[in-house]
Length: 141
Image (cartoon, rainbow, N blue to C red; front, side, top):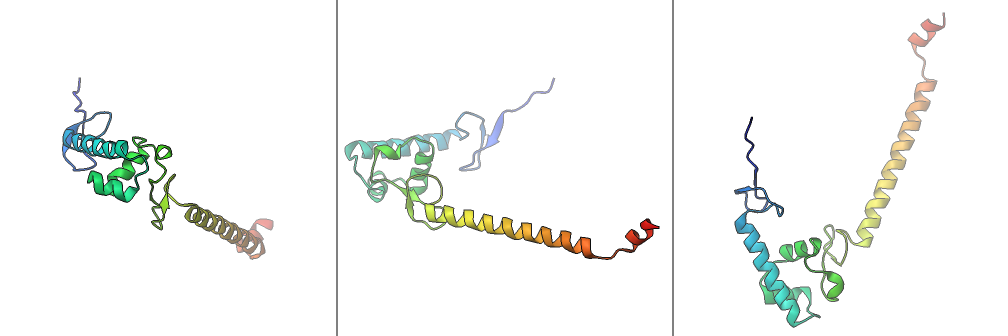
């Protein structure tokens, strides 16, 4: 019977650790908890704090704060002045990964590309129907 090691590399620092529910090594788990507690402490003192002030008061970077939002550790609906950035244009948003204009732009680009691909396929079908093939001529005899 083979013994399987249940280890992985930490996605934050790369060190080897025993797999757990958080998928982080002990050091990064402690750092995550510490940063979260500093943010929650600042939020307890001022519910209307802005994201910039939260960064300033807690000393936690925007990447970590954004991760807390995505992990639902900090609920944006409870703090009206908090936001994070659209991954494409960097505008402030409160839900998803992209702002509505970027989402619309990507969706329209996808739609346009699908239409172009469909037209290209139709063109190829027409060309194949109109082209003369010697094999077609031989198979008719």
